[in-house]
Image (cartoon, rainbow, N blue to C red):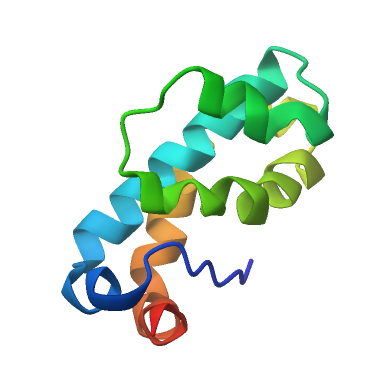
Length: 104
């Protein structure tokens, strides 16, 4: 499962820590997972999540579009049974060097 997400840009990208970046993108994945559980159509996920005024910084909003296909590719059984945000966080931390390079 390899997916580089460049959600923090410019000066913010240089300042972001592994914990912050992986935590914020894990929150995005969790919101996408909830949208899928709520039967939101994939094409409507971004607007649905943004309408809920998510707690993460605005510069992570672009990650919704980049991560939605990954969540929607998962079997519904896995979406129901697993915390995809936690799974994403583990993948992100394990692959931090690749993600960090994609932020610049």
